[in-house]
Length: 316
Image 1 (cartoon, rainbow, N blue to C red):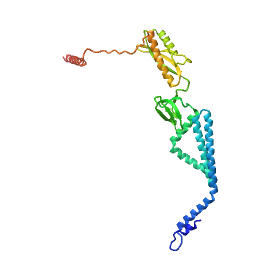
Image 2: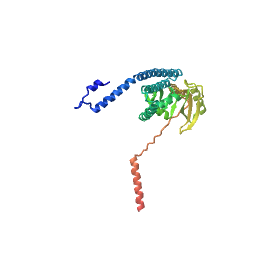
Image 3: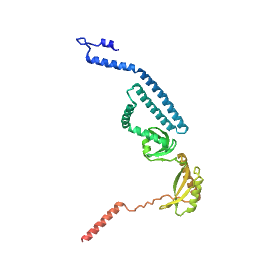
Image 4: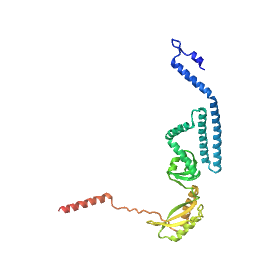
């Protein structure tokens, strides 16, 4: 096979090929013959791998469509991608065993296991976030569009990706939270239920008609736009301060933040107007400033003189 190459190979003084050069040529010749004999297996392996590419794409898209019909688009994207890559890996392993008959599936699996351990250590954080993302999408503690609080960040869930969850804060800022932090920490889901309760404390003067004031507060809040009529409004005496009786009012609104904020603002404004119209006093903290007519330095000097006089009398 390599006769022409051998003829052109440099010879020593005795006209013989160098031993090392000849062994290399023989080895290359053996490899080339083996490759030619293995061409049918290589072609079959390529065809099998191409077939697995189409199979992986088909099953990946099928999984995405099935989950999309159930309203779980994000989970469908991730699970579909995962299915596709698993099938591609199976296709690669099968193609390698066809191309090299001496290579058994057990050897490939063993090698894959060792590689998986090495890859796991190298990409620990990435894999941890990826697995946490899968679990979040499977268990669905919250959905896209929910308002949550995690690690001190509050906002609306925009996307749930394999690596992180994207949160849009109410001021427009975007927060990227790794999925592993979400999965291992407490998450407050504000919009988990349709209704959410808000509260507000009002100070009522001790000399005011408490029963009348509490009735006005209750009626005013019940008639405020945005306050839910499904649950009652609570008006409760809550605390006794120095200058007023604290009344705590509670009401329910839709759990979406815009509805909560609007209703809260209207409750404060409407209750203040209602109290003013009824002539009920809502006291505010007052401070009394007492000014000493004497200069502090003068008082200090007098105190020192008095002390010295007492000491002199004791000595006498």
